[in-house]
Amino acid sequence: MRYMVAELMFTAVKAWHENDMICILLNDNREIRFPVFLNKRLRSGSIEEVCDIEIICGGTGLHWPRLDEDLSLTGILEGRF
Image: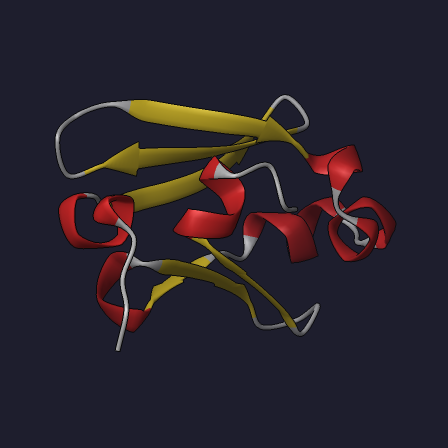
């Protein structure tokens, strides 16, 4: 299996919604953010649905159970929302 360097080095330790942004705290204490409107399912969800974020796959992905949406950290870092 092939991995990107980012997949081996960075994991999410916390994820939350704040001011129409999805915020992710990485294990090296860096924070990344992206606007909710960049993702079709998140954009169409309610605040409660968008705020319900789970960290999955050992910290390499995010899941919104009420919206049935999953994003990988690699995809987010590459700008694929």
